[in-house]
Image 1 (cartoon, one colour):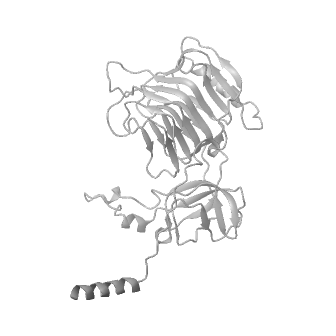
Image 2: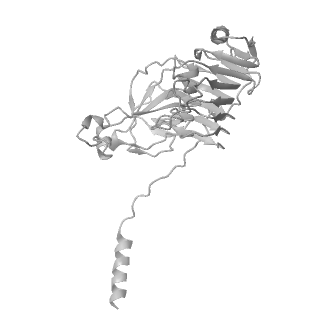
Image 3: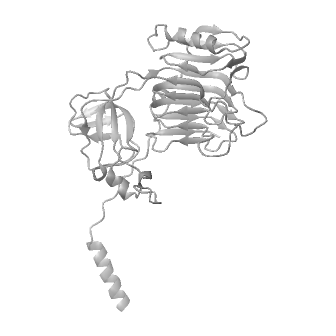
Length: 365
């Protein structure tokens, strides 16, 4: 009887207690990752200039061809043309740089067209880089008390100056309250300067508005962490992308580096195959990477909607330690790596800490 009485009392109390508010879970949508949000196939851009193999240092020969194509008038899709390299081992003493939109570098055969980077510098063999322009403008606060990760809707203090099609930056600030609650303000040892500081780990999403309803905007891709007023919420500014380059690609060749074959941990040679920053809607495909110490493809924070596909990275040469062999690496957002293979890497498929995302690795090995 006593057991029955206790059971009845507990049941009564549980039924009377208010139900806790259920946390809303939104599955993350990765479908917008990749070149043009994976809504457009990667193009076969027509050849503008052909470069045949020649002995000696080919850096200037290829760079002049890239610069020549970069000066051509883009077509209606933004393509200027392709630099096609013939078969052979093209020795380059300095990195190649693509700094104009619409330029593609392609090999005739991915196994027979080889770029061999020489010299002791630890940079990349190829750079695709625009220029960064600081975003300025009126800050519009996100007024939602909380926004769940995966959401594509935000309510703002105002939508003045915004319209459908506007490209915006959404900034989630790294606040002192957030740092302290995570206990990341002091890493110990009496060295308080080692802890995180406000603004150290701000996250910035690059998004396009696809709809406006009152003060609520709908985004073309989700945010990837929750936003909470308790920790500073977030704010929106109109984004400036005047220095960004687009419609660039590297395809169908091998990138190799000269190294000291008497030292299997040699690091005085090329570290990265392809380094990309301040670029959008670009691609790397059908490229073989050999003997690098760092990354085959290194996508920096100011990259978005990049596709890297059907690439192989193998036989890295480096010490076994931190910052080495981060083979297919992204610090950007809406980037897609698919059907890529990494051999003897350490962090074979990696997103940099606090990469804005979403970023997808699909069918990689």
